[in-house]
Image (cartoon, rainbow, N blue to C red; front, side, top):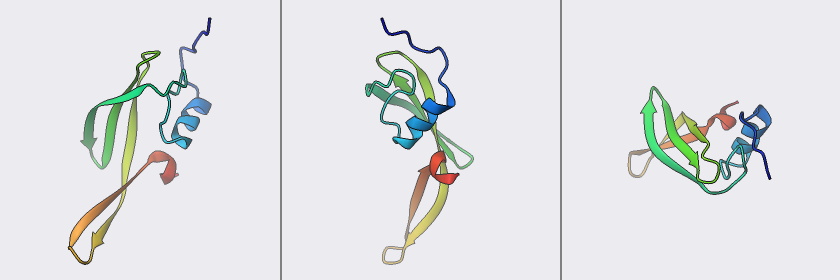
Length: 86
């Protein structure tokens, strides 16, 4: 029987960010889904959930810049997650 930790420690969170959110930070399952999305004051949130252990968490993204396509004069937004803004 595999007993999962009740809390997700900083090492597991760092691994989740380093691997671009590819697996659950608690049980390491790749059976995860993003649900509701919300944007607020330059941040974008995605509600995530593991389908195997039922852990819920939010991914947080920050606006880090804007590029304007000179040919189209159409701004292209560049976003990165918190890990890349350290």
